Image (tube, rainbow, N blue to C red):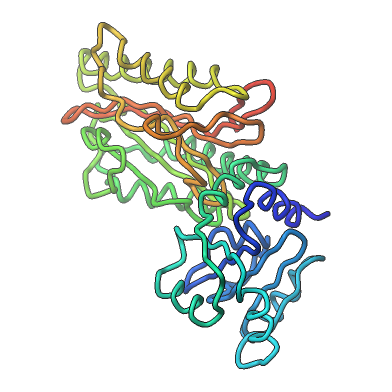
Length: 361
């Protein structure tokens, strides 16, 4: 059995509410389309992928028909769309009167309505959560792709340091980081590269602007690469020279506190441990450090799943997550401290959960 068909079986073993899974692309591609086909070329705009436990139909158009035929695998049939009687007849046969699963987090409502009216399923059920859960556990191929993406980003973080110069802007440094990543083999950034100087580092999702680098600034870079469509997400924080001894001491203390929280979280990740508990191990350390000096300054969850998307599946927010660590998960470990008007420190690594614990990719 090929690895894609294995994904079908695992999905249907967990998702009992439906007869058939329907993935429909719009002008952009549903991330699950790649996960469930492995197709690396062409956009497959407005294509329909119908999946059962043992078979898949891809309904495509002349523009990409040959590309689909070239990439198909045993268990998949490619059907030419358009005004062909066979395509319409087959779609009606596979959808009408059946329980159809859809990705409600991607499919626009107008597409949902058109599908419902044209093919008359018995019901259409949002299975986006089940799809996300299926993608939580990575196979060897997926892990190697993320490892490759992580290697690119870590190397770029090292090489970018020679461009830390007084007067360079956040936008300029972000552009340079992306250029370095591309030269190292990245297919593109997995999200818009975040570069923060000085007090901007207190804003976790700051968009790079024309702020110029000054002596004594914190430099926070949060970036990711793509390798075979799989993402990395790595953050590094640095201090650019010294503004004063006291300023340096405060920033060094922040850095050391975040690094210790990061390492404590990493050591606590093992199979069966709720990821919300891992979050609180890091958060409690930060909140209690030096009699609560940084209490409430860690303002986001410890991490998230990583894969085809940079946020690949459900997050690990302690407010609503009950996900437990399992071997094969790839997650981020990214504690931080953020002080308005002063700056912030975040250290983030991509982590593989194994049967023996967790390792940084």
